[in-house]
Image 1: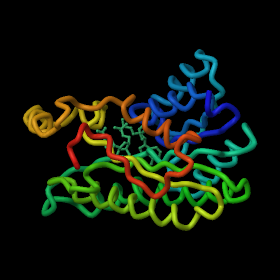
Image 2: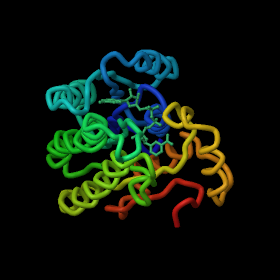
Image 3: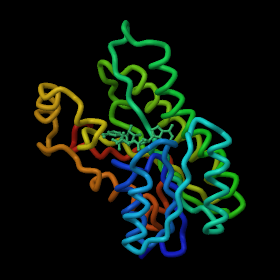
Image 4: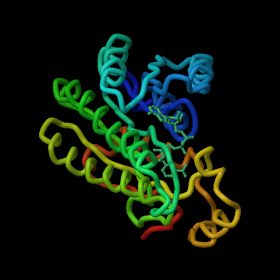
Length: 247
Ligand SMILES: NC(=O)c1ccc[n+]([C@@H]2O[C@H](COP(=O)([O-])OP(=O)(O)OC[C@H]3O[C@@H](n4cnc5c(N)ncnc54)[C@H](O)[C@@H]3O)[C@@H](O)[C@H]2O)c1
């Protein structure tokens, strides 16, 4: 129960990695603010699951691209729990296409949600954390942001940008007792990856030294460490969770 009395916001936590991360932080004792885009079918069911397990949870439906929604998310967290100790910028999408076929909309949507969304959430939450003189910000990047990936120019650029945002935030907020780190998951079993062609999945598997795909729990465990006091002297880092794919 290392996070007892702490409050964590996890964006895009209706399902997938975000849900697993929120669950891990709840198991560690944190109060949880779940967020997902309005219209997401999953978030209400996820909130019910958390409540049934006895966890303290509130829901904020909203788009991380929208500054008003983000302000509302912060307001809801403060009204419910009085403080914000942990922000996990997890909300993200893919719109894969080869570069010459990629539309401007594919580019803008991915950059807006994956990168601008993280900027807006970080900016809004940092104001609270600066007053508290403590906080932990964790960005969910990707190995695509480190090594690039054919068909993912938009996604790779957004995740590389997120790594730059992580390092700048870490440098800027360190003097206020706030750390900022990123994780770079590789191929993790989720709805985002289950749609990929079998042949591509097989190719990925062959290139992973640990010879298995990751699970959302593999990611949640490392985020749990970065959210806990065990990582107090770690900032500006990118931790790969990829079975050794990138080393
Ligand atoms: N699955 C993987 O293999 C993998 C690998 C590396 C990184 N990631 C990253 O992990 C994060 C979660 O991925 P996932 O696989 O769980 O995907 P997912 O599609 O299952 O979940 C993403 C969640 O974000 C929500 N979301 C989308 N747009 C939003 C918005 N504008 N505002 C708020 N919420 C929004 C979705 O509704 C969904 O619940 C993403 O940032 C993704 O890029 C995933």
